[in-house]
Length: 284
Image 1 (cartoon, rainbow, N blue to C red):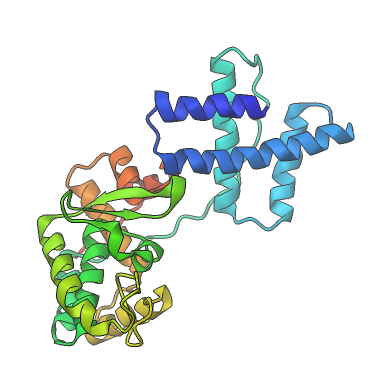
Image 2 (tube, helix red, strand yellow):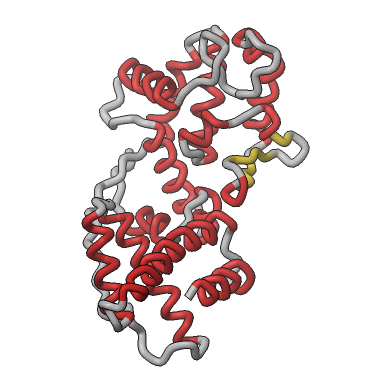
């Protein structure tokens, strides 16, 4: 089965032009499935693949995986077996009757441009290096849709001013995120000026620093955003994810297709991106 998985992943990468991040996610989910099937087949208790898959689904539930995670893993399995049928490796689909759990759909919170500007105005009221840092971070979240973990993990060398882009993640999950010239100017000015006022150790690589000169944590910036939202008197609950949702919805509204948005957001599965197409948002 692992050989079949390898061929399937090659098909995704080369035939469908899936990103390295997407292929890596499929690899992790399908290798987990293959390992489970291998162990269970060695026991010789369950014979058919369809029963093995049902047993696998039960194990995922017993391990307390979330409904969304289980649904993703089952979707990966179904994609693999569908490919094996289309390529002539199988005649019958053992995953045909496999039922994924229902994933509850929550209404996503987003900020309109005017709400975002009200939030940003709170940071602009300050003249400290921290305020200048916050402005850059807010702009990257709202106009580039970074995850908060990606944002706080950025290092100086992850910024490429020649290509107007930055690089998030590591290894196979590393992705290129383009930014506008305006964002590039903000970043450059921050690095050359305000970041230096926060810097204590010349060897520190982190892009965004706290008052102690260490890397700003995602929890720390979450609290900063919360404080700005309170001061701006915003009724919408504002978190870093709110700004990411806002970026995604803005892109869809301006004509970006789902697959392009998937790449911009760094989603492993298109199903994660479809929530923006399927949800109804309250936009003021």
